[in-house]
Image 1: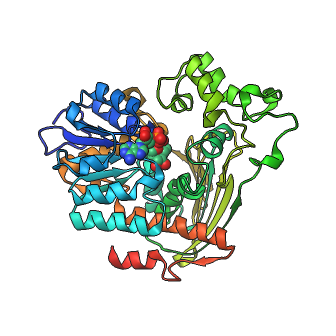
Image 2 (image 1 turned 180 degrees about the vertical axis):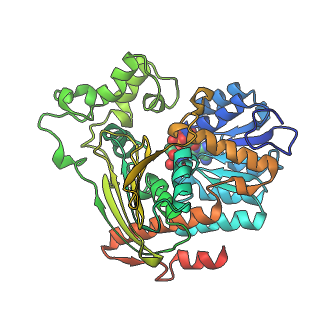
Length: 445
Ligand SMILES: NC(=O)c1ccc[n+]([C@@H]2O[C@H](COP(=O)([O-])OP(=O)(O)OC[C@H]3O[C@@H](n4cnc5c(N)ncnc54)[C@H](O)[C@@H]3O)[C@@H](O)[C@H]2O)c1
């Protein structure tokens, strides 16, 4: 194994990986093989889109017989790799995850695990029965700062944790791109916003709360603003035809066309042309006919643009979470953890702890040596750390290297489903009641 291995390895050859779903996320994770060819090799790819699979095939020099249109064909073959990266859309997670587990592949599964509590549980059971490792794409767990916050809590710097306040600012144009026009706009096609966007955040709160179980939860939220009745007078159905587009913060001309004119073809421009690389012509064509050129007040979106979740954990620890679309910051989370001896706050830049005894504030840093130069840079480098840990876990046959493993991830997903149930039924949900999955799960795992 090469010198670049962060965890060392018992395997002498690279971990052989199949990519299922060669879209945005698949490309990010598979980039690790280009950086560390001695640790990971992409030996197969499946994607419905010819453009996507051909692009991956070229990058990783994959033999023709291992290129597939649909993932089912891979499971019909003898196992020919160590692991699979499942990066298909939200509603296409359970079926491949269970099928690949049964074939004995270790699995990196994008979040959310699946779109129902039953399917999430079935995935965890299938992996346990087959004895394969499962890592879920909760990338924030691999962010060095998030890890440092947990270490500080465990070291007792704030005493007993009493309350956790956490905000996820989605970002105004990010929300319009993904949750009004894009892949996660409609629950029937993908999943509800709390699951799609904030399962990361509920997972972090659950993690920081320690071994305590959430006992009750309430949630409110709705689709605000991005509705027909909010459409400005004189607006057209497509931004390219719109007379009032200049005054609209969500104008597709501003978000995509102006970016590509400046030469910026990174996200979000990179994802709007499904069968070509983005340039002025292909982006204009996508805005003329595709989903990303639609007026944000004329879409088939139904997922919440703002949602709050209140939780009470065993021992009385409370937590308040907010997800908001209408923000300047994009996914730069803000957290305050209030304890019996101090207050820890994180604003996305630094960790500050105010000690009630000394009445002094201390700033803490984490080892954020950013692996951006290595190419797998998303989520402040956390994407890199996630795939790095997964490959090391497989190479060393050591599941303890995975921080987003099956049991804890399942519990935090089940909490997300309970929160959404509260919102839909307009009542406090007592977790573990109504034969909820969390009770059953705790017995099993
Ligand atoms: N961890 C994170 O922070 C994070 C961030 C964004 C998205 N995600 C999740 O990652 C997953 C993928 O998202 P994305 O942005 O890469 O989407 P994407 O649309 O860019 O990619 C999905 C790919 O799956 C392919 N696909 C669909 N059906 C298939 C099939 N039957 N067989 C093979 N391939 C198939 C599609 O053609 C597409 O290329 C989603 O579940 C999403 O919610 C996670």
